[in-house]
Length: 143
Image 1 (cartoon, rainbow, N blue to C red):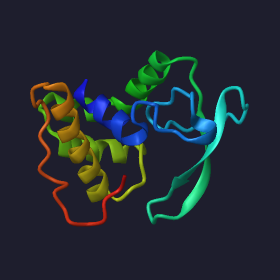
Image 2 (cartoon, rainbow, N blue to C red):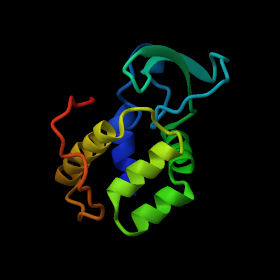
Image 3 (cartoon, rainbow, N blue to C red):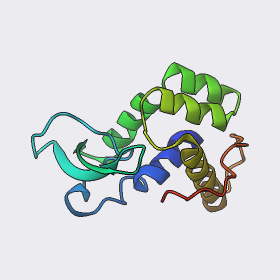
Image 4 (cartoon, one colour):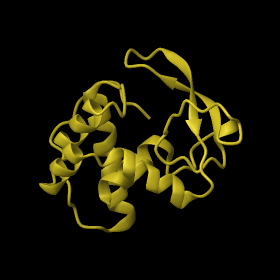
C-alpha cells in the first residue's frame, strides 16, 4: 500500500498532477499505451534516461479507482512484491526499473521515492514499513 502510494505521488500526484490533455485522465502511474484513440489516451511529454524529451501516449481511465488499480497491476510484479515483503525500498526500486517501469537513473528515482515516502509519512501518520538506504545522494533531484 505504501509503495504504490509513493510511486503514484511521485509520478502524477495521485493522478492530479497532469497538465493540459492529461487533466482528468485518472492516470496515477504515468502509464503509457500504444492506443492513440483520444477517447482512451492523450499525448504528453516524457523523458528518456539521458533527460531528452519525447512525446508519449498515456492511458485515460474512467475513474480514479481504475487508474489506481492499473498502477497496482503494473507496478507490483513478483520481484517488487518480494522486495517489499521485507520492507526493502531499495530493492523494490531496482526491481521496478528492471521491469521497465521507468528509465530515470536509478539513484535519482531512489531519491525521489525516498523523498516522497517521507512526505507521505508526514501527511498520513502511517508507520514506516519501507526502508530506503539508497537515495540520499546529492545529484540533481527529479520532481
